[in-house]
Length: 486
Image (cartoon, rainbow, N blue to C red; front, side, top):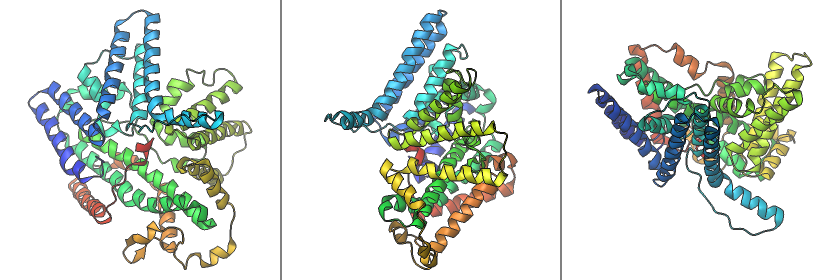
């Protein structure tokens, strides 16, 4: 069940919303928590019922370990419980996400012939793992209290952030679940929630799923791409990922607001960044926060000299890459960002300030090229793509705008009005306009902060919803969110 599906918008969401506030209306507060938790578990199990067994084991294990730590006053015992908890969560993720990666590499290096397990990664396990580790570490530090089991289940499964984040702290959401004023319907929060949900839905359905056609075609036919087609492919994926992930974040924030819950901001115009450090303060912000608070700082941060600082920086980006996917392409992507972050730190010591436009251009182009490894199925595919991007063919420029893009077969089957999506004029214009939006306009969080509950805004939201739903029906684009894969 996807956020952009009819069954979610017209069936699941109205039922869960109505039941939750109806129970609260009759002061059945504990039952309302149970209702929302069960609804979230149903949402998770709708993708694959057997995943419920795994997530239930994870929730129960982490709750028991947290409770034992809260009740214990012995530092040594708490340390052992924390170690068990971290090992349990990492092992769970490691088995389902990385087992085949390690087996295949062992087979390659040693020449063995171990069978692959062909395990399917349960949805959201990467996010759930970091969320639970943060909870256990905070419990060890004495920063949590012993919550009710039902409240903990809701914290762990709250459906807006269950599948692809943001990675929330217990202290951010659990107090909101327990706040009495949040038990009542808020028209202000509902209007804001619908507003930003529609922005996210538009980003996903209208923009991300459209440019995905060019990105997918390009990567599937990478061996035959021309110089310009390879750049179209890379820019298409860069834009697709931007609007897909930011769209999901907007939708998650909007859905949570319907229930009077404010999720942390996870996305703040990252393509406006002037260096890689700034980029990671804007992109997947809760992941960066987790890596900083629970890995970088415990490893010593920047307190143990320059060499140790650079090592710690490199480690968190290496982990970030490997966390995103079990493959050498993700490791290379994380390594590139780690090295770039170190270079930025070293450059800062020179006191040389690049012009604004130049620092932004270099940062964006680095991010764009690094995304090629992030998207590619193999290292060889990424290398071929990047090689083509730096081998211009000047004769191609003359004929490019007057002939269909040759190696985008899927694009031929889609039309916008009289334009086919393999029309190079449409492609170039679309990518250019979308990049301008990413570079120059206010982001959705800024627009949400400016939003006011007025009848005109409500009518505008309803019109936008109708247009987006018509787009979903007409183009039949119900693709999964990209971050579901990670």
